[in-house]
Image (cartoon, rainbow, N blue to C red; front, side):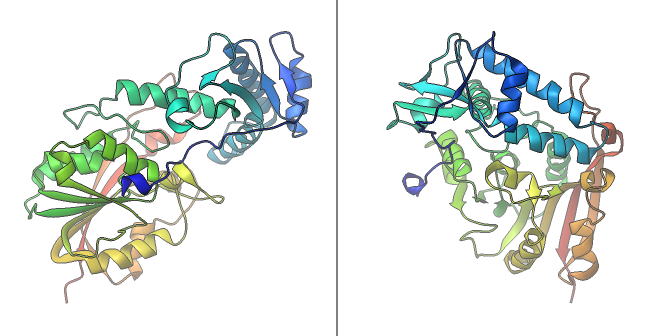
Length: 357
């Protein structure tokens, strides 16, 4: 199956278009006006020139968009994404052509057939960070070993919800024959369940990079026989009933069409109704349905609706066994965004069971 999956990668840009050039002596205001007019700009000479232009662009946008609310931050990020993705950098023979540039292994891994093309500077930044995480690994407090997250997948940078789940697994008294992990991402929840004695975990994801990444991470070890992967929406091909279904869904409703890794952050209106309908068929009569969620959308006034509470109130499928909550740790002093809501944020672990007949 893995050989048939094409990973998501930044699409190589091949252009004959005349590009605006940017180097340290270039007029920054002129360059930003060119970006706002939709003209692509090529970083030349040094890699640091790209960092300089992004910094100037951030300062320019912050003067236009206040940073006093969650919605304003969304507007700022939308404009920043649009304009920064017009900033290009050249690649030849799988290396960046500018001086003092990082070495990024993904370029050779993802583009063996391309020896000359362009990518946007933010894409290169993302690939560089991803390569370092992949190469060096990341320690997760609830796991014994580091994970090596693949490019283009969601992996946790906050661990409150993982601690909540780990504590619940320690108290879990049910059967540990099988479980289903819906939307496994970097595989942390699946690894937690195996670590706590589950014999088999069936894990699904709609992101091909998640499938390829976790398969590569497990290799031919015992894990590859204990965690079985499927590339598919929600439950994919898994139709058999199981003792435990685990779902760590996106925590925010989408404000626009999403794709790629954004699907791990924002949910559409059909996700929860479709999930609960499918989960009803796949949960054994005495099984547990566990969802990890947050009150983030409510405290930031993005949405008043809580999709799990909505299901419990009107879905007529599941009942609440218990909801565990944990206050989120304060944001780091290094965090640049105004995260005033963090003092009110809680992560939630919902345990649902079938409604008794």
